[in-house]
Length: 130
Image (cartoon, rainbow, N blue to C red; front, side, top):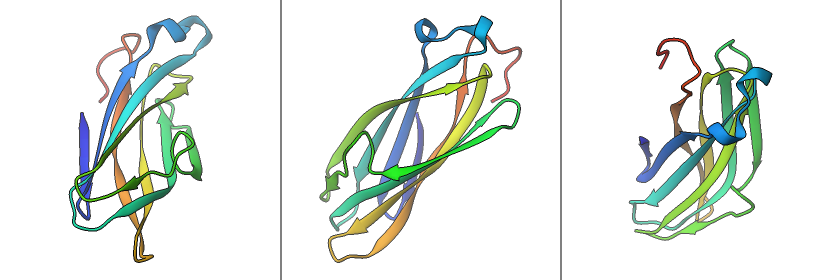
């Protein structure tokens, strides 16, 4: 698991290569990643939006922005956890991604929480890059 804490909000990410959804002959590689968000602080927060920066082995960058995650904008009270799984396709057998979540406190303060950069590695890569 790749983990990061920002303002008492822990974000942990575990990526998994999906061999059955990938087609190396067509330069199509797919990963699932599970994200765990835990409020270790003393104030209630809501996840408002997400920003992802996805980079493949050739240096091509894709940026993704949007409201919430998997159709939700979860509210995390002190001690609460939220977990979801999503996916990412690449045209190369390796890459990495990271980003941030925009959070808002119940008092209206908005701040960003870092999503740790994590590697997307497949058994089809040559050598170990990450």
